[in-house]
Image (tube, rainbow, N blue to C red; front, side, top):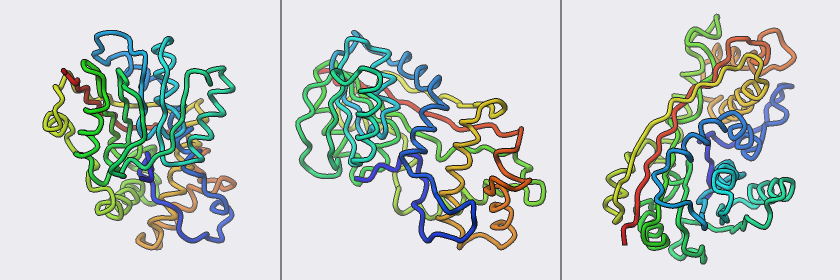
Length: 291
């Protein structure tokens, strides 16, 4: 399974525009997301209805480790098994673990969780799956797998995103208001068949898989871009990737306006705007294996 956590399309052909010569990798976007929303991730880990502090945690579809490191910080006695299908993501996670002196508390496992047989992931007290469940080809089977994996009384936290974040005001850019929403709509149409479980209500699915639902909440994420270079970098990286996926579906006027925003050397660059605000939502379901 290829965990494209931010639901951005893969680049297709390379265009000759100077500002499109290098499209940021999924790894870089995941790192930016982790940096920008760290406060909200910490709030979710603090909210989890745990009976006792977990000692063994599995992070399913860990990406570059946003959840892994938040959980290690929240639970200083815990060890985390970080699972992903991307060697690049896992390598980045291991490098950070070494840099922070946490390598003894982290185990990485490369695995395609769409396969019927999963590797040995131990018997965790907590399983965390952030922006990964909706990428599963058969998520109901994966939920049952997690139920069998957890220790009795253990908790499963499913965190999902409300699509890719928005950054521009509704009336921007001035010559093509609503451009960002049109780009996202085009991207959503392309993803509809590929990611059919995005936006699902995971509560009933968890109950059907044998869990007892312990709580559900939605967190509104809003991070001002003024004085925060990471927000601008995130907006630029994400819209670059969307541009490469949907360029052929946009009008000439929209494509030209988008290119002006992505031209970091031009007067209309995203990076020069003082009105960028990262806006999205995180929804989380907490479910327990009772026995």
